[in-house]
Length: 379
Image (cartoon, rainbow, N blue to C red; front, side, top):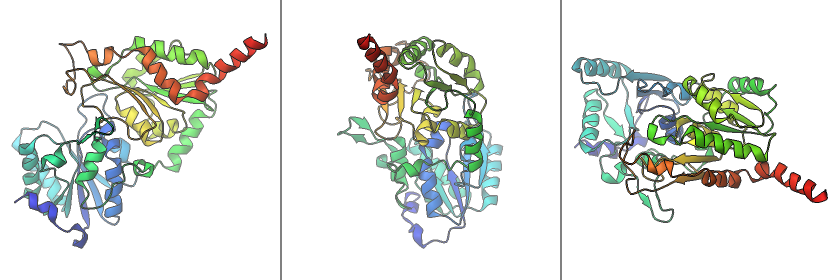
């Protein structure tokens, strides 16, 4: 009975108010950008409100920090995760009902059939007659296997399939990932970089990640960055992340020979996007900053653990180089790995990642190296 709601011909309905259900933080929001852009196209004149969660991790940026200023949504409702107090549910229902949404766009990650149906019934209880994107079927709830690529469908692709009744999210179109950075944000970034000697040619690095299992290790990053810098001592390095990652970022960049700029904790996600959009590449781990770099068009060299199945959270597009070791325990979903000591990511070598960096930055990384060889030959 509930599942039939998605069959309503949306194009025939008059939609004045849209409620979008999306949980998560920086990376989760970036991954859903094609869908947010689709919703804005499908309902250009509607009031678009997002129902989301309060951040549950000190490293997590709230959804508002990414979408504010984009024009994609107009307002937000927030609630705490893992809430069991009935009074909180009643309060949330009252807030949703007051918005009087005509349509609910479901962009939450699947958590099993029972919870999906529970969510749908709650929104119906709030008086919302039309629900779009609810993944009742296994086909919509699961990331499909792509045999030709030997990886699973991206989460962005799965979300786009769920919203096919309102249009094509165009996941492979770079414009679908547009953050719609404002002229003010771009001008502020230009001012910040104006006096920095590395502004003409730089890479971005972030050691940030919400989960311990995704951390490759500061020693590895220090070795890698030192070896990259050794071949191009004039190239700049911008370090991004939250304030708590500033010290470890400095440690990782200790052997960098060129200009360095540590911006950890100093900028909002959108300001960070404006600063790094002219960089040559992003180096980092599976994280929100990696997805942010993707959204502004940077090729990424990213080290992944195997906590998720390959492909689901990889950055969108073919320009990236992903280092992912598929150990037998892949897809564990763990935040901490105690049994195997993070074998999936600790087995990744600096040489592997350096090779990926060289393939993404051949002109920059080898320019001074080749000039040195020419000079040696002439001598």
